[in-house]
Length: 179
Image (cartoon, rainbow, N blue to C red; front, side, top):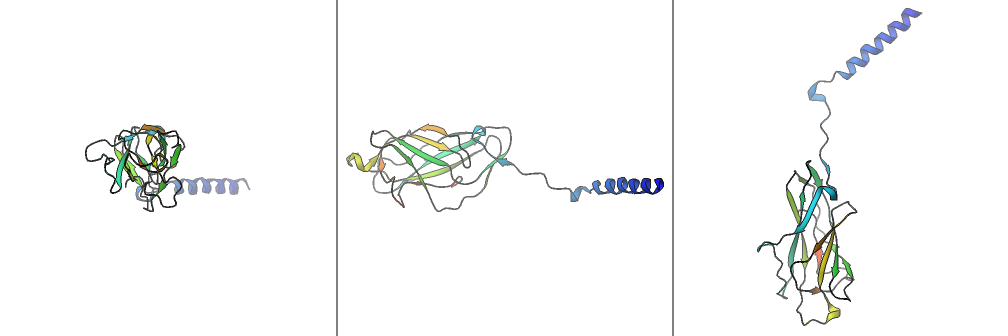
């Protein structure tokens, strides 16, 4: 009986050893990068001449761009929409949580030190527009996709936009990261 148990135990060890000897081509793939967290990123408005929104014109929509840079030492991904809440400069403005466009998000991979941006479409209005019809941006609370911590960015461009914070399809909205 003892020799049978020893033979079964020895067979189990041999089978177990054989099962762990997997050829390199059959080994599982290395896990891809995980998502970027707020602590991995820094954020800001794109302020170059070609990135500035045309806030002085009132004939059409314009775009502002917010960027995220991976400041960590690891590769990470962003996918989806940032959360963007505008805080107004006027007492009557309050906070406006921007609606999302219908554009489909794509997964963006950020190596350490690389940057990706997203656009916010705005509808500027004239200074003479009645106060209750305009929103004067002061600060933006920007939360990376799938995160809860935000960045607070001061609005650097001046101007005012048509107040549509309760509209179903407002002319001011945001696009996904990478768009």
